[in-house]
Image 1 (cartoon, protein in one colour):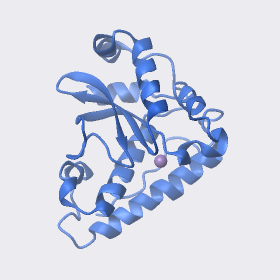
Image 2 (cartoon, rainbow, N blue to C red):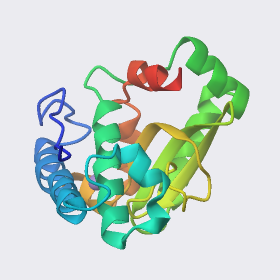
Image 3 (cartoon, rainbow, N blue to C red):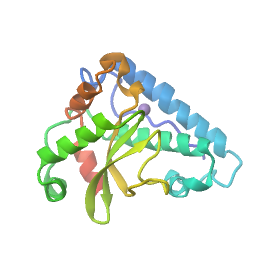
Length: 198
Ligand code: MN3
């Protein structure tokens, strides 16, 4: 079974005005579609064909840069679309909010630390909220790396992701990455993040 580009749960224009339809269309169909196709081509006929993506990422240091970059790209975007919704924003609830308060002091402090990590990430990469040995942590990765990879500095299970590649925001925000990061907080699907936290 080859990996498939997942369908979005919403229309390309659903996240406007925070993320514009054209950016969503290119990002999903071309960028995510590209990673998916290249991953499939790279593993076709190899021992990796048919393995779950998490399994491939866990041992990614053993494989080629093509598998690392496109396997990460496939996984990262699949998660990113899921943690966004037009009905998003506000505060997380229940156990997740409690865990955030415990790990970061308050939701406000968490938001500041996550946003600063995203603003200050040099070049292309991702910012993550991860579950790691019973705790919540914020981390970033370069390129299409992620915290599931054996090469990651901080490892854990990603429950929230933010794509800070320029292709994620440049059409609408140009060089204003911090405006894109502020907009992100209005479209976070906290129910989905909470589901992944449990
Ligand atoms: Mn991207």
